[in-house]
Image 1: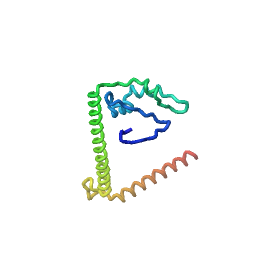
Image 2 (image 1 turned 180 degrees about the vertical axis):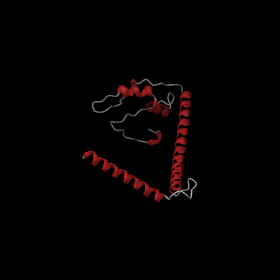
Image 3 (image 1 turned 90 degrees about the vertical axis):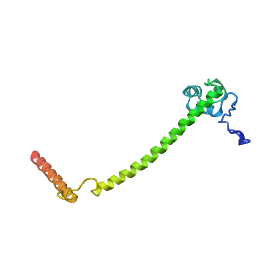
Image 4 (image 1 turned 180 degrees about the horizontal axis):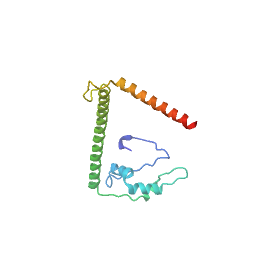
Length: 154
């Protein structure tokens, strides 16, 4: 909890932890619980409840925390901040590129349907004629299949 929060009430399902700032940075402690596999494994192994898992003071006291010097903790936090900044920047770039890609896709489809993607040959038949020819060929093929079935059934 932030120091400037004032008087607070804590639910029985919560655990208040006071951090000794001369030994560990509070943000470093938070990251240990969020991302340190050694800590997460211990928490999972130790937290067992009848209906749900609970973390209590005795379990918290039993967890072995990797605790580098404050200078090393500061460096780790700096590197984490740098990595998070890079990830956020990449996420923004991905989002921007997705918007651009969608716009380009729509533009390409529009040009494709309007016949602007390839040079048009005046000798080519119109699309409507081509579609009608395809329909006729399909109908003829279906008729041929039906006649073949009748012959084999007879």
